[in-house]
Image: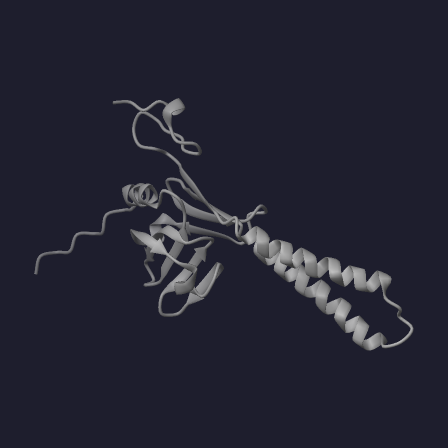
Length: 187
């Protein structure tokens, strides 16, 4: 049975044969609360700089203003970068883009992928929080929310995990594009 492009899920393009490009996303709306906290620190730092009397205690006031603005900017941009993740798999690469700007970004050639697995439950706790994470015993991950994810086994022995909606479909799509392992000669 042929699936028309109008019947395809949003963000997926189909053809008469195999889907050419798979795209998926994952969102974390809780991060907006953290971004608001960063904005509040930034606003407080600006408020202190504008409305305070700079006649006495200039060093303490300057450190407070600079500290609040720095923390506010770090929290604001750090959380906005991981509000969502977009994953795209084409015939040669898997590409992961984070946030509205698309940074950080990771592009993995499928020629470097040995296998792809479905992870039914990826949690920020197992990775040490949200964001772009690295743990030597587990590998690298982009975790924007708790839930399903894709785990890639790379040719160099490392693993890369990304949380994304409809991860099972992504794994099938990646496995369809992996080159079969060379046959070993009989001993």
